[in-house]
Every structure is written in structure tokens, then in C-alpha cells.
Length: 325
Image 1 (cartoon, rainbow, N blue to C red):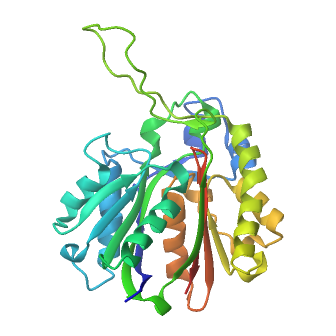
Image 2 (cartoon, one colour):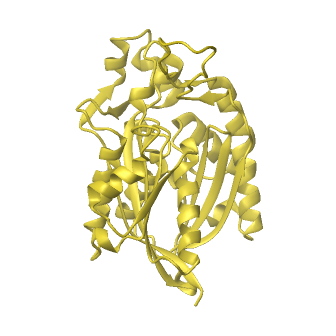
């Protein structure tokens, strides 16, 4: 029997520490007026109490599971999207699987930066539609703060920490909520990068791995996104025989408010259709769309509504996934 995919629960979790623009201004050359004018961000959460990415992911997953009749043992697959993992190995997803005691689930990470949740949803959807898996947990979690250079105001002021999770389950194909997608990658090593580790130049007993902080070329990011993403969305919707006006809610990557406003203008759609948790959570990378979806899911009756998820991030990766409730 052909299966479809249904979202049965969503949740999000953020660290307790709220960092305002004034807090950042106390440690770097910036101010609240500059940050709000350029990004629209007023505050963000940062993990300052020892919580790593797997901890945020685990909390979001537990909150999602609590909304269902499922136990952790009922989960068949765990996908964690992150580009701020606890470490290169084991995977963050493996740590979440351990924390949840989800002994029947296999687990792995996806690293596509800020488009991670969309890529993760697409991947889990295919596993469910294969007929081999019934319940999947997709979590996007980031502790961006640990990768920041706080002398770099062009990057550090944007980012916050958080996690969002959804539980997907198999249903009859006609009841499936994932109805279309389009994913793309354009290889680019330099516009946005994080966590680079250089290879050795010679055999030396003093060699020790050194990891680079997050870096981005902000103007190029803005230009690339505003040139590509509105056309991508319009083209994808046209492929689905839809216009931008047919979509009830848009959840794009929460890069910064100015980019979201630009996309809305280009599509000639009101900002009231667009999620904007970036104002109070900052750019939470792959977690932003997952967190915004959870907020919308609990604020609005989505029955009969079309929701478009659009991610874009380092790689350059981008993609859209259409949900029909």
C-alpha cells in the first residue's frame, strides 16, 4: 500500500538565557539601533548553562513525544539536522537516541546548515513513503553561540540557539500532508563556512586540531538569497499549479527580518503570511523553520491550509517543501 506522511506533533525548546542587543554591545563594537536596523533582531537565546546541541534536541523531542500516544520505543527513525553538532562523532542523533532510550530507532545527522529542516523533512518523508518505517522524529537543533567569533559583529549579532522537532507518521497516501518539494545545491565553499579544520602540513608531535569559527560574507549572502529564493519559490509553486497567493503561510529560514521582508515583497505577499521568530530568537540556523512551524501549529488551526517551508543556507543549499493540511 502506498503511504503518505502526516505530522502528528511538533515542539520547540530554547535555552533559558536571553541575550539582548545591549548585552552584545557591552562586549563588541555594536549597538541596539544598528542591529535592529540591519537585522530586525531584538534578542536571542544562548546556551550558557552547559546545554549542548544534543541536549536541546532531546528536550524538543521529549516535548513532541508528550503530545502523542507514542513512546520512544515506537520511533523507527531519528534525523537530526545541525551544523553545530556536539562533535564529529558520534552523531548528535545517536546521542539523542540514547537520551530518549529509543532502542528501535536508527539515527543519523544531516548537515545542510540553515536549510537542514527542509532537507530533513524531505528525507524522512521518503523513508516513510517507502513502506518500511512508520514513525520518524525530525529534529533541527543548533548551539550557534559556541561557533561564534564575538569580535565579528557582522556575524555574531545574528545568531541564537534553539531546537525544533516534529513527529511524522505513516498514513494512507490520500491523507498525506507532504505534497511537493524541490531541493537544490550550488557548491560554494566561501560565502558561508564554519568549523573548518586544516590538514597537516608536516608530521609534528605538536600538531593538534584547530577549528575555525563561523564566518560569512554578509552582503553576498543577502544578494544571493534575494536573487535566487523568490524566483525559486515562484517557480516551485508554478510547478504545483499554484501562485504565491494560494499559499496560506510561509515559513522561510529565519536568517534576518530584512531578508524575509524582501522575499515577501518580491512575491507580492503580505508579511502577515510570513513567520518571523527571528525578532526574538535570532537566526537559529536549521532550527528556525522547525521552531516557527511549531509556533504556527499551536497558534492556528491549519486544517485545509497550505504551508510552504523554504530553507536556504551554506553550501549553497536551498529548497522548498509544501504541506497541505
